[in-house]
Length: 430
Image 1 (cartoon, helix red, strand yellow):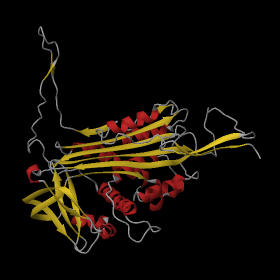
Image 2 (tube, helix red, strand yellow; image 1 turned 90 degrees about the vertical axis):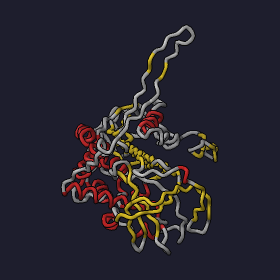
Image 3 (cartoon, helix red, strand yellow; image 1 turned 180 degrees about the vertical axis):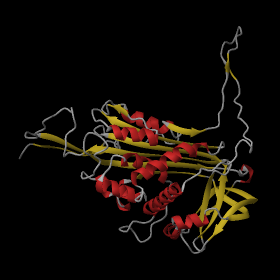
Image 4 (cartoon, helix red, strand yellow; image 1 turned 135 degrees about the horizontal axis):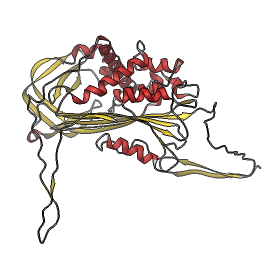
């Protein structure tokens, strides 16, 4: 269900018998040595059409980040920037799977938001399949895992063509469960935890999980890269980190000097290119130029700017970078609606090729986390889309009930994440 490139480690157990100790002896783990010759950089080969797909997904990435990070039009004129981590490609995978069940205005809006309007669902499928197959195997010192899955609630049934496309392009094998079994939320969370190496232990909280949902579609992205040029831990010292609002705090600041990196400078920012492993993956650090803010950079950063400056030119650099961890738990429904696909979140959504009942997106969120230190970076994200039943039709074989509140009844209003009761009352008809 997932593709991965890993550095293999072996643990050998040998049985040692003696009069006093019959416990197995575990041999020490020996990490394999990866030489430059063994880890030659072999870039992904793209056709012109596939290159355009990559550019399309990058355009979506910048649109997404701006929408999440910049102050909302209805919000304050100045909003303090916050630490955010998102995985745009994870959203592309989750929406790409679902888009194979979409038609009409709903499908068009999804294609437009993901910037695949010219190629549609076929283009998204091709892009995702290409990255799923080749991205994990580019660097033996960088671990990349991409996983997709679909959980279906009994007795709803996916359309056969949708199942075929999910398997062919996303390596996703649907699993049917009874969402009322009291276990499904734990199964979903375990899937997210397993496919992010424990970085995302919870995808859906108790109040977010809906046992009446039709389906949950998930994508997980995991990345662990070792710097090509590691920072020496002995050079890490607490130093002052200044916020845009003038605040100061002490952070562990990694330091490296007199090493060659690629660098670029514009009127908006200066950018440092930090490669991982054999250079197949890299982190670009963008610092706002003097007199500019993060919001200025976010507004001005486009796919065209990225294409022009992301490699930069060689320099000898003195680098300081904070060691940090950051995480995001982002509700994507208002974000994706603002970006241009509101119809998918309404009962008017058109997903006739998804399953045997009319549906719409009830929940869409992403949980993401990053850890950065002297050795490298570890990052993960899980995107989940929860599909709800549209009441204009009826599912096959579901039990029917009658609920007529025509006699006195009790009611409770509570805070869902904790279960705390805010109001409790009764109504007797007077």
